[in-house]
Every structure is written in C-alpha cells, then in structure tokens.
Image 1 (cartoon, helix red, strand yellow):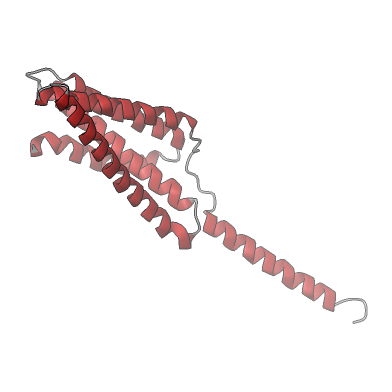
Image 2: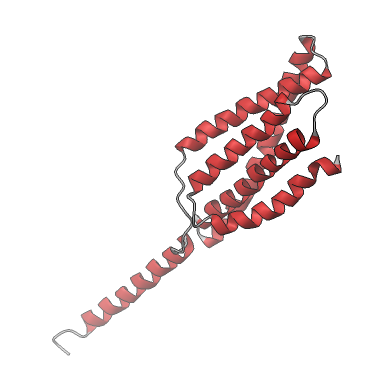
Length: 190
C-alpha cells in the first residue's frame, strides 16, 4: 500500500512547490479547472480498473492525478484566500480552509457509506460496491468541475495585499488630515 501511495507523496512535494511558482503565470481559475479535471481522472482510473490491473497503467497515473488535484488546490486556495483578507484575519482564512476540508471529507465519507450500503443491498459484491463508489466520486468531481467554471480567480500578482492597501489608505488619510489641519491654522490671519 505504501508503494501505491509513493507517487502521491513524491508528486505532491514537486507539485506543491511548482504551483507556488506558477500562480503569477496562470489564472487561479485555470488552476482550479486543472485540479478538478485531475480529480475526475484520478477517480475514473479506479472506476475503470480491470480485474488484473497493471500498476503503471492504472494506479500510478491515478495517484499522480490525485496529487496534482490535492496539492495544487491546497496551494491556490491558501494563497488566494489568505491574501484577500487583512493580516489580522489571515488565520481565520486558514482555519476556514481546514474546516471546509475536514467537514467536506466527513460529509462525503457519510455519503459514500450510504451509497455502499445501497450497493450492497442491491446485491453487488465488494468489488462492485467499490466500483460504484468510484463512479459516485466521478459524479461529484464532475460537479466540482462545473462549479469551477463559474469561479473567477485571477493571477497572483505583486499588488498590495488587503492589509497593505488598508494601511496605505490609513496613512494617506492621516497625512491629508494633518495637511488640512496645517492649512487651516496657517490661514491669512497668521
């Protein structure tokens, strides 16, 4: 099992670092569409896997696609959510990412268990139940792909973060207030 997951770990390290470098080249929406497509491919490989599969033809590409989905999605969501909030709210953004990850995982694990039970009640053997669950996964991943088509996330850039923008506006507002105070006290009567 550890050998099966090795491409996920190795690919994850490379993809997590690489996705940080390409955020300013590709729009966030393109990266999200790529991750959703990779998720569909990862689950689809397991849904279509034959009885005596070749590791290199079925499991290896599925694990690489899963790594591409998970690690790029994690990087994109962290960068765009945390930089869209002021510095004192960035911890909240990180917490929101983690909570949505684990609540989503718990919810869909429950959905998978209900689906497996209904497949078992329909008389499918264990292999048929797993294949059915992978097809349910393909369906959910396809819904995620459609949702990603409607999200608009641009490229990461060097523009000031929300915190820097607020600080800059506060600084310029206090500077203009000081200037207007000086102007009003240095009127014609002085």
